Amino acid sequence: MDNSKHKSGFINIIGLPNVGKSTLLNAFMGEKMAIVSPKPQTTRQRLFGILNAEDFQMIFSDSPGFVLNPSYKLHEDMNMIVQTAFKDADIIILVNDGYNTLSEHEDLIKALEKLPVPKVVVINKIDQLKAERIESVKEEFTKAMPESKIFEVSALNKKGITPLIEHLIEHLPLHPAYYPKDEISDRPIRYFVSEMVREKIFLNYKKEIPYSTEVVTEDYKDEENIARITVMIYVERNSQKAIILGKHGAAIKNVGIQARKDIEEFIGKQVYLELTVKVRNNWRNDINFLKKSGYR
Image 1 (tube, rainbow, N blue to C red):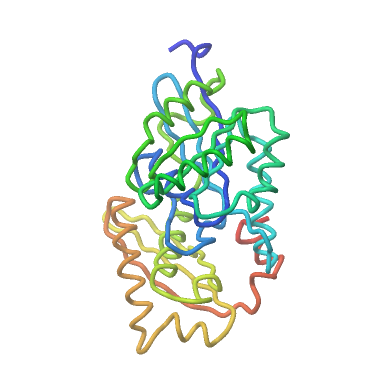
Image 2 (cartoon, rainbow, N blue to C red):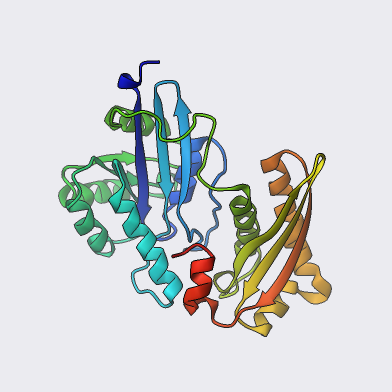
């Protein structure tokens, strides 16, 4: 087609933790790319999901939730990733789930005011909100961000997604595709493997355990009929390692079974998955480790 009529741009999704940003990305893409859990701060790094059509390419950016009071250097790095999302955006989506107050969004709204790009406010989880609350949130954000278009969606149920996508396409800038049309993400397969394992940790463990773990795919051997994968799970203390392993290794075995199923579905072949747990003291404040893990 004529590239002069092709649209392409970066649509960056921001918001506070646990408002459904990753679920919204998955709804846009029509498949699960970003991990999700009921716990806040599940997303730690930036992920591009690339939605292609003949006449457009939409590059959705899922970022960590903005941490209001960072407790670790990890949180500071996550907030830096959010700041990066402001810099390269062609369109910004601010996601709110109706549970957070307008004042909690104050820093994000101030940053958005400075950006000369189209802005969209998404009120997510409308299936869980009363009509009065939805109207109240709309009124608050209409006053705070009068230049923004507001959409009501349920990302989990894919309700309201089609008109939102149509609006985004309308406001995409004219530009050739940034990525080859057969690509759906900027991340390698190892990243998705690590994230699938980390998701199962978030879903299977309580309290501080999910937040104290980092997951790294150490080895990935793609053979004809099977992928052999070695994954390292880092924790901060020996007591956390014992919890991850569980009695006679039952807990980590369960994580492996669940993660292997998702990985096999994702790559389309049989997987041999080996999980190992290692203690890395205070890794969330270890600048070198954070840099090696891709946070800096």
